[in-house]
Length: 254
Ligand code: MG
Image (cartoon, rainbow, N blue to C red; front, side):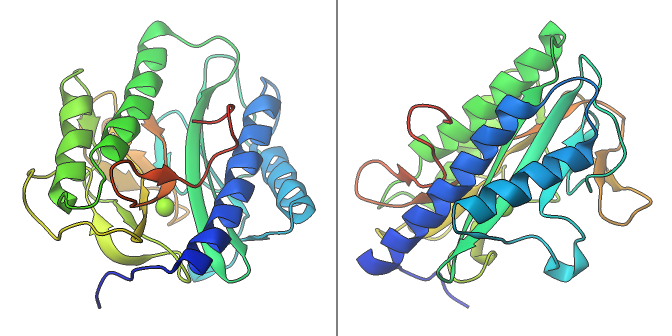
C-alpha cells in the first residue's frame, strides 16, 4: 500500500471533518471538571458530533465500545469512558475521531482536571510542544523521519520519553492509512512528503519510561511504570512550506 495524495475536493471535505473534531474536543475541554464521570464526556462528544453533522469514527472500530477515548493519568491511550470519577489534579487525554461525507478527522488533547501539579503541567505542555515540532517539520520535500525526529528530540530534550508501540498514521477515507508515523526516528530517512498527503501526528509522552502495558479490558494502554502520560494529536495536510492543521477550531484549540 502506498501513501494516498488527496485532491482539493477531498481536502475540502477533510477540512470539514477536522473542524468537527476540533470543535468537539474544544467543547470537551471546557466541560472537564472534578467529580464528573468519564462516561459523561462520551455523551457530550456524541451530542456535539451529531449537532455538527458528523459521525463518530471510533465507535465499533475493532469493537471499541464508545465514541471517545478517555485516558486518565497513567493511561496512555484507548481508555474506555465509564464510571471512573475525575478528581482534582488528574490529567485526562481525550481522543476523538469523526467522519464527514466519507472522510475522517482525528485529534486528541490532554487537559488538567482543576489544578494540576507543576510536573504534570510540564508534561502536558511538552507533549503539546512535541506535536507542534512535528507539524513544523512536516512540509513538502521533507522526509517522514524528520517528523519523528522532531517529536522525539523535543520530548526527550525536556527529560520525558516518547511511547514507541503506538504511532501516528495516514488518514482519509480510512481512519488509518499508510504511512505509520513513529514518534521517534532518524531525520533524513523514510518517504518524501508530498503536497496533498493527509496525516495524523500524535505524540504520546511519558513522565517516566516509554514502555507500556495493556490493561485488563484489552483496550486501555497504560505506562508500564505507572508514570503520567499525555497525548496530543492533529490531522494535517502537507501543503508547500507549512502544513495546514485540519483538526482546529480557530483561535481556540491549537
Ligand atoms: Mg489517531
